[in-house]
Amino acid sequence: QVQLVESGGDLVQAGGSLRLSCAASGSIFSVNAMGWYRQARGKQRELVAVITSGGSTNYGDSVKGRFTISRDNAKNTVYLQMNSLKPEDTAVYYCSADIKTDPIFRNTYWGQGTQVTVSS
Figure (cartoon, rainbow, N blue to C red):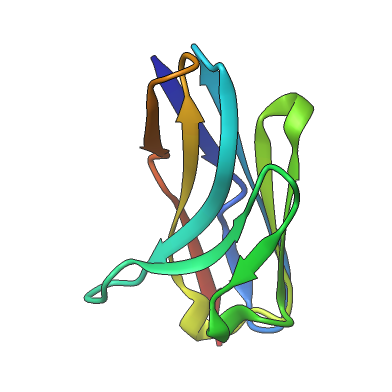
């Protein structure tokens, strides 16, 4: 069994910063790509950023230049540094990880979500 636990969501003023964390734990053989997605009220879930086990990154267009994804492979943890926050960044942020629980079985796991609210 695998769990992803997110933390760091909060209420912040526009222009401020937040750092989200997500730690994977449980029966983990290896962790491949990890990422962050978000879902605003009434909208579809969208990609924020992803990072491979080798450190390659990809960002959604709306966050490029403001958000930075990173990871600590030894801790199976992914981070999202969010700067210059805007009210439109308000959403529930979900962590995702592509995890093998043995040499063969691979699945995508999701965290429970953490609320980020940016006030104007």
